[in-house]
Amino acid sequence: MTSRATGNGESFGLERLERETLQERAYAEVKKAMMGGDIAAGEPITIRALARALGTSVMPVREALRRLVAERALELLPNRSVILPVMTPERFEEISRIRIALEGMMAESAAKYIKEDELRRMAKVNEDLVAKLRQKNKRYLALNQEFHFQLYHAARMPQAMSIVETLWLQIGPFLRDANSEADLDDPDFLDHHEAMLQALAKRDGKRARAAIEADISEAAAVIAGVLRERASEAAR
Amino acid sequence: MTSRATGNGESFGLERLERETLQERAYAEVKKAMMGGDIAAGEPITIRALARALGTSVMPVREALRRLVAERALELLPNRSVILPVMTPERFEEISRIRIALEGMMAESAAKYIKEDELRRMAKVNEDLVAKLRQKNKRYLALNQEFHFQLYHAARMPQAMSIVETLWLQIGPFLRDANSEADLDDPDFLDHHEAMLQALAKRDGKRARAAIEADISEAAAVIAGVLRERASEAAR
DNA sequence: ATTTGTTACTTGTGATCACAATCTTTGACA
DNA sequence: TGTCAAAGATTGTGATCACAAGTAACAAAT
Image (cartoon, rainbow over all chains, first blue to last red; front, side, top):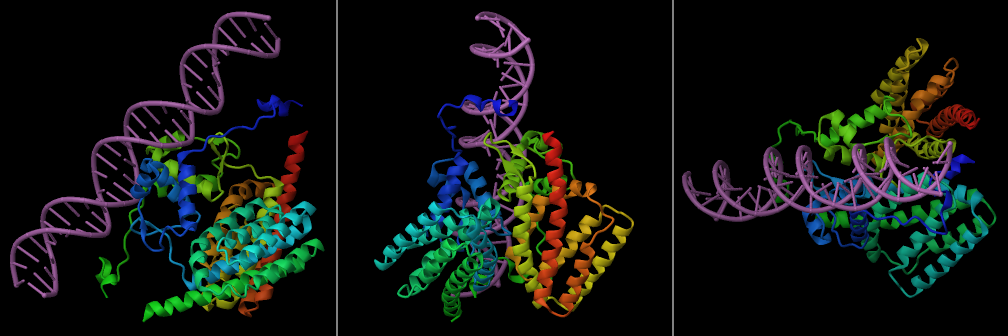
């Protein structure tokens, strides 16, 4: 078996320790700032300001921004300045439709491939989610994301996974503050999570897909409502 | 309304003529080279070699490659070198499944929104496609792509459109040479194109979706066959 | 003859400088 | 006081240089 003997033939128990480039760190930091609500939509993001904040030169920041633009998480204006795009109702609804198509398919696939321990882990996350939600803890959004992504991980579709990640990155910055206006008293997405867990346990792909679709479209309706309300306010 | 009076207040009927950056040109050139089969899968693509070929410094090339990596058209190895990823049967089948989900949805949407002249243009493209195919002209691939993209354009989903573009970019370099092995004597995708045009004329979203799904999955089956054959050859 | 250690070369990453386009401010003229 | 043009500051783009990690070539030793 010569093909296996290339270099790493005798890896002791050691993992390959990889150095992180500055540009990757910059990418992660900007992403965190976006999701954390530290960057306002519409206002220009300057390379030099970010570089100063990160203590690096402009180069790593430049490439990090470019990557985010390629992922459509940021927008490149004709002026070549970069902004966090404003979320319009149209854009949000289109993203939701894409999500329904993709995540629905992935849920169906996950029902086929998910393993017992993965299912248990999802149930656990959902319990935590319920708890956080009862105590009105805002961090429930992160748990919701974890629930969904564990599901998609089980779909065994890495390519689709990364597309979905970019979609969540696009809506993430906005969800955060739109959610503060939405009423969390009646979070009916919990029902869909329950339905999802049951469907997965039965390996019922159709029901899993239906649960995801309902989860996305109902949440989207709430958010789109907030968006349209804001739009009409801004128009006065 | 001071906010609208910034600079472009008095745009006559003129479009803003935009200068193209070197990095954008580099991006386009590399893409063309990929689609043209000038870059072999698996072999490393070096920044300096490309920069030399394009007559620029490394900077524009660097960012072009990074963008293509973000779009998953190129792959970044742990060594930080960039390659055109080899197409495995698994990867190709996953991409096909994603395409069915996304492009199926877009076809259904297009049936709702497409206008008469757009429909006529699609029919025209299909005629050209048939002609090229009869004379065994290899350039029919470009027309096939045009047919599909005109359809998706009618879906009025710009975000989905750009995702689909990245998917086609991923399979494009491979389709080109896999197709030379596949038999073009019996291109049954023409039937699906006909079915698509009829479905669109009747504004029948379901049939339009079905036509696209059949088109993609049957083509995928052929290509996947070629791929698996090659894999078994390579294993001997 | 295979392996190991060293050297030379290649390659990606990041910093700095230069430049042009854009945006902002300022000041003069009406 | 309002308008507009010139001056100044800001910002993205691209080139060049420096450096470290990786790769390949080569020589010495078992």
